[in-house]
Length: 48
Length: 485
Image (cartoon, rainbow over all chains, first blue to last red; front, top):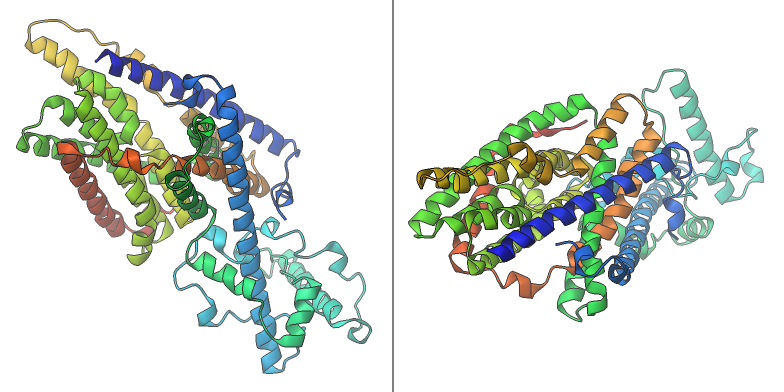
């Protein structure tokens, strides 16, 4: 049972860390978009 | 479990790079196939015009012949350029130099230049009509063939094979989503992936979440409330319905409360995450827990690969399909993948339902603590305290706040159409592609084989019943209820 408790705690702790990274990455993308650093031509330029 | 816990971020880098490379390859495939589809359509127009003797260079507005059109409605992102914002067009769509400053004389131009000039002239006329208010929708830039393709087409009247191939691939829904999921699964279960890549492929899966957050820029609060209220009702009905069904089945099959609790949380709310969260609370046996997780993974994988085709067979519209997968697929990554596979509108609806559903995890954990610990202790004459607020704070999925922030920014008009397109269609694809590579590479048949025991019977029956019932309900409710925009 302790094994499960540890696993549950760890899962939620890791998910919380993941979510913080998700918010940071999303915020950076939005800022780059709003400041015009990434434009509608950025995505097509990644491909042949 | 996150890969970060298995030895730090550095160990995840090789796998993460692998997922990025696979994601890029799949997006390149997707980009090429969609380009070929557009080229095919333009070639057809030219061939048809040529056959009718109107003059091979004239741009025509006739719709495609029936046989050229996909038999089923295509995902929005698969639609030809008319349906997409003009930035969706490839860079070569209409070079600025193709726009004539002065009226051009056809005699002085090569056939290709005349073809380009006529398209440009037509576009200019339509633009003028739009500016005068005659046309309500802004005309889209015409799709222009490359010179060598055009000249070869005029000479042979034969549409190149790769363009026909592109149309077929879109018809069979073999977009980047399918390529990554099927390809990843194939790699994992045939040649396998070296251990050095494994932590990174696990870490890649949550990279889907920034895509979910960015998609928030497509909504305003009114359409979030419109679909969200129905979603809330559906989620509540299905959570309680599943808990009741699983409890009934569990008792019929003489199972203990631990297994019933894990399966109820797993099939009712959020798959493996919910099962992990409630396992210690309901005192599940390790064997039952692993059976339960195997069953949830097996059902999710089968649903992911079959639901898009079942949806097409049942003629579900994109919003209805989104509502269906939102209520019946239990894992966020699998749900997002199935909805993206079907189309962008499907994703918009499924995303709202998923946000509502994962928001319920703390409430379900809270309920389990109360039911199994507080109530159980009270029956035994003991007193067990529960800090409800702390449980909600600890278990709340934070990324939802980012999604709500995006909706609010859009409500205040911060995002233009271009921003919505960049965030919600272009960069969303980048995040999803990396995440889907991780999902595909982590579908191991060995894990799925762990499904078994009574957990399999209960879980599979409950999840299938829920999927069938939710399909009936969402079809009856109809597209208008789930249409986001």
